[in-house]
Every structure is written in structure tokens, then in C-alpha cells.
Image (spheres, rainbow, N blue to C red):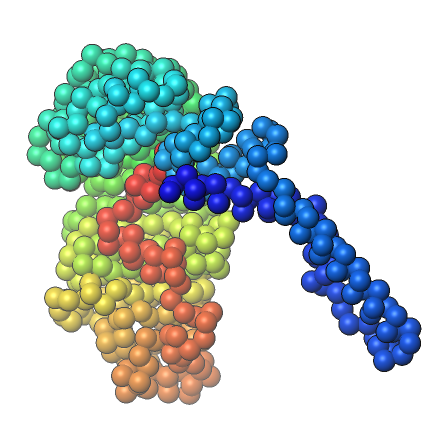
Length: 559
């Protein structure tokens, strides 16, 4: 039955390809306009209409004759193009198996072009690898399992026994016992000459993470482009990276304290990675920090990272500051920083780093996102919503904490220290998802909200999402304060009617001072709706799910 569906789909594709020859005819047929001169009621007009009808009837008969071509009459190179298109529509691993079961000729065409079609076996812990390898011709083996089980260890080992055929190793939610057996197995001490992507993640909150040995991957990965570890210490990482000259993505996330890497150590091996575009570095706990007893002077020279376009850091503020002061990133477009919670934040090096990175300056739009676990400030350097457009990727600074007053205290400190970079913001969005407000206490001093607003002197449009009852009373206190939000012209609320009484003094005072503010319902106009996907709602979802900083890792689909 599956083979019949494949044949049916390919026949549809064939009709589409053959009909390309009459595309111009179709365009003429669908775009023809009524003839105005001469009149259709005149003799000349009727003559033109009759001949036009005959022309399209004849071409229609030709079109029918074209569609009678069978797929069996196509040459092999045309079949190969169709197969390539078909396999490229989605995950190809199961699709090519269906193709080769249709007929002997299709099997020959598919197996004759394994590189062109990207043929590969998909190996999971439940895949009987040894039996499959005995049946099919040699081809690449993609190891991909998001929930590997110890019972399937032998299947993974069987795939790893062919290192010259493994381009991708993608294992998430690994139990430490399974990771330890895989990492120390003899097959993983060999070099993998075609490996381009490896990602290993242990199960969340694993208290006894396995340590990768010094001989992991034979200490060499010459074609590696993406290396990702989550929750796994790897002391010999610098040695492996020395061989990975083509590395593009390096993600070392949720590092246990036992695998702590100092900022000085990191910058010693980064310069060798001249093609590195995306760096993620983060720790599990605030215990991973530079030694407070050693006061180090700033370095005399910085390390240049010429290709780095995106940087994500998670740790204590001292670590982030010590790392940023040591690097130059001339083409950086996005930086994401997440601090562990503390009372006071002092981030002069972050301010200086943003100041010397051209693409991070002069933000046009800002988002303040509150969740039950995080608070974050996003800065967009264009008018596009975060994540949209060529410059839509945001700069992000956040903190992990639960209480709303702690979150606001953090944002007050961050905004005050980044003051010059916020003075160009013209649109400010503040909000959260409704479910995140459960358990929040409205015990925040309104002056804290005022301190958040104070740096945004150029904001003309203020958008409030699901926080009307918290912010409306704050605006009520601004009746005599014009230095806060002095340029504000539009106020968008989720439910203006419920907040009308609270904001009326503010609106009246601005009107009397010849600085009128228009109140608009958040959903009144399409262009002011809550952005879907990668916009404000998308940012909240990313933050809430804990995917921030490593979203690209989890969304990666190995090929």
C-alpha cells in the first residue's frame, strides 16, 4: 500500500514537471484581459473571440496529450531529479526505503546515486543495526535518538563500529550509565573521519554526570562542524578542538561544577577556531565562578574572534565580565546573557562590550519579558519584532529568579547600567503569559517600575501584555512627572476598559501638558497584535520552556 502511495505522489510530480512546457500558455490563459477595442459585439470582436476559443481548445487537447506520458518512459536522470525532490521534502530516512521497494529499476537508480540523494540509515537504540547492515548496500549511518535506553546499547555500538560511515551522532536525555559505557567503549576511542555533527545531552538534573575520557573520538575530529555537550564534563576538550579547524558551532551548556572552565582557559583555544560562528557557554550553578581572592588586571590585548556572529553565556556576572573583557567580535550580531540571581549586579564590561560592537548599538525596540522563572530584557536593532527580518535577532540579558520584586530589581539595575543604549528605543513591550502570573503578589513598589521606565526617554509606543493591573497604577503616579516616558504617544493595553479609571489621570495630565497619549486596545489593529511565532509570544514561550540559549541545539535536524 505504501508503494502505491509513493507511485501516486511521483506521478503527480511527473505531471507537474511535464507541464512546465506549457506554463507560458497557462499564464496567458489565466491573465488574459477582456478586449475593449474593437467592441466584442462588433463583427471584428466576434471574430477575435471565436479564434481565441479555438486556440485554447486546441492547446487544452495538447495539454491532455502531454499528461498521458507514463513515468516508466522517463530516462534515469529525470527519475533521479524527481527522487531528489521527493526525498528533500522531509526527513529522507524512511522515504528512500519506500522508493527502492517499488521496482528493480527504481532500486538501481536510487542506489547508483547515494551521495546525490543523501542516502543514510537512521539508527536508534531500538534499531536492529546488525541485521540492517547485512541487507542493504554500504551507506552513511545517522545516529539519532532523543530518548535512548540502556537496552539498546548494543545497537548504538554496532553503528559506531563503522566510524568511516557516521556523519552525525545526536543523543539526548542520556542516562549517565549509558553515556559512560558508550564514551569508554573501544569504538569511541577511534577517530571518526567523516563526523561533522555530534551532540550529547544527559538527562536533566543528573547528579552523577559521566566524564568524557581524554581519548574520546581518538582526540581528533578533522571534519567536525558542530560540537555540543549539555551537562557533561570534558577535560580534554581543548585537545579535540585543535583538530577541528572547520568548527562552526560550539555549544558547551549546563556544565557541572566539576567541569568548570575558566575564562582564561577558554580564550586560549578559541583563536584557533577561525570559522566559529556560534558559541554557547553556560554552567549549572553559581558555584562555577572565578576565584574571588585573585584580583586579575584586565588583559593588555584582546582575542579576536573574526567569524563569531552569535554568543550565548550563562553564569555569574563575574564570569561574564571576565570573559567579555578578553574578546573582540567585529561581526557579532546577537548576544544572549543569563545571570544567576543575586542582590547586586555590576556589569561595566558588558556595557563596554556592547559599546564597541557596532551591530549591538542603537536599539529601536525593547521587550521586557516576565515569567515564573525568568526575567529578561530583549533589545532589537530594527523595527521588526524579535527574530524577524535581517536585523530582528535580539540582544538578550536575563536572570533566573521567581519573585516578581526580585525580577524587577534586576531589570532596574540592568537598564540603569545600559542607559545610553536604551535612549534610542522607540517601542517598548512589557508583558508575560497569564499563567505565569499565578502566585505573584502585587507588593512591588511603584517606584521600581518608574526606574525601569526612566531610561526609555525616546519611547513613543508602549505595549502592555497581560500586566495592565500592575502597570496602570504606576502610570497613575506620573501625573506630575514628565521626565519619565516624555516622548510617549501611544499606549496599548490588553484590556483598556478595566484600567480606564487608573490611567485616566495620566492621560488627562499628558493632554493638559500638550503631550497627548492615545490609548488603544492591544488587538484593535492587526499591526499592533501580539506577534506570533518568533515575536513577543514566541520569546515568552522560549524563555518559559528553558530553551533559551540552546534553542538551536534542540531544534537541529541532522541530515
